Length: 400
Figure 1 (cartoon, helix red, strand yellow):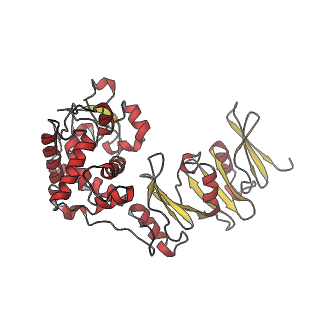
Figure 2 (spheres, rainbow, N blue to C red):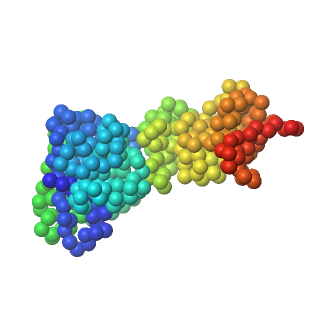
Figure 3 (cartoon, helix red, strand yellow):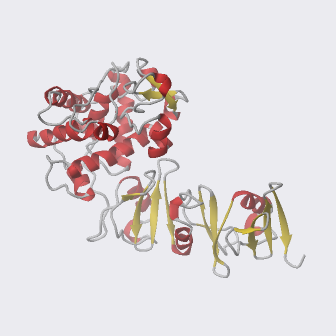
């Protein structure tokens, strides 16, 4: 059997008609082999502040039988390589034509935006990992619960997340609301269509299997309430762990001022506090950025700018004078005398080779800027210029 593709695409294509492909839960995984996958879903959801992750696992049970890798379900097509598959291909749906067309859903939740390339462009390469699949599934589940005609008191993202975390699998009314929501908004089957009864039963079976197979509700853990400071919004998941490690409410960040939110690129999550922010991605994790360095990063476009996400907390320089954060694609350095400036790319490499701020150049005094034939950054005692034609850098000391 072939897996059907995610309803993100399905809903747009099947208005007024039933979906062409029912969910399939065929895989080569035994119950014991599925346990690490259940654990991965549980832990990735917990990192996002979501308890009751069996709701997600039930969907994955019906999509691919929790298969993430093609080696676990060799009847399917081969998708792009995944680090969670030992470098081998993820499972890919075959509902959209021959495997050579490279179309169809990817991974255990079968995320699908068209071709494999379209899907990676929309969801980023983290959709090729269990944590990334789960994170995107949380976002989609939150949206489903928010817009669902079957749920109540869930009309905002915050309320939808609270609805999920309050979910009681012993409450028949809530179970019916969830299964109806999944069939309609995830699978795309509408009430009154001939597919409704069978698919309601299929997703109900997957839901109960996700609870029972790994050992019951206890396996999935208690609900996550997060950390609050007085009446502040809660901090949850991995961001909460980072916040507590920094000192929580008494830390340099102060109290949270807004609920955790997703970044516009769909890759990261962040929480804003009185004096800074914590940003998280599935790799390398959660890091804080605050003060003048945060202001400089904001002016450069936040995580969507040239520097990308922070990959360190703000740290003091060895000379005790400056502070810096390292980001995916560069750094921002600050001193009281110079202010905060970024340095990246070939110029940053040349500055590092010259001894960083402890070298002859000192601290940066400008962001990188364009000059004839290349780019340049200024420092306390000189400058570094990169020549586009030769792809080489030149250090020029002041007065020379």
